[in-house]
Length: 77
Image 1 (cartoon, rainbow, N blue to C red):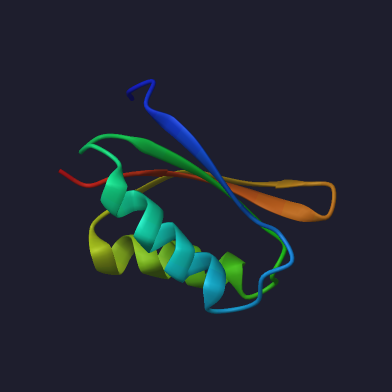
Image 2: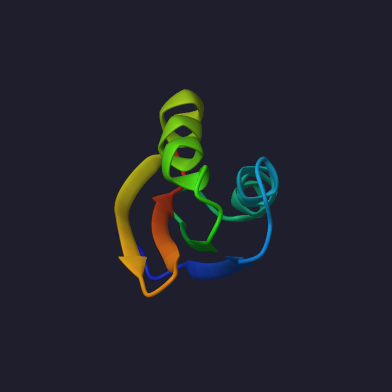
């Protein structure tokens, strides 16, 4: 894993905005870069892993902190 980590705060955003914003932010990262996505939309638990598998990105981890989820996504390539 690289130290190219950016954080995207998608708290308060509802489906599909967390995934759409993650897709846009991942485009600006170098291959192998890591995006930390914060989301509190209950649908993100399904949407984020699905987005990663469909787009070829690697879902490194998925965790719940208090009232939100934290996803670490490594950009494909």
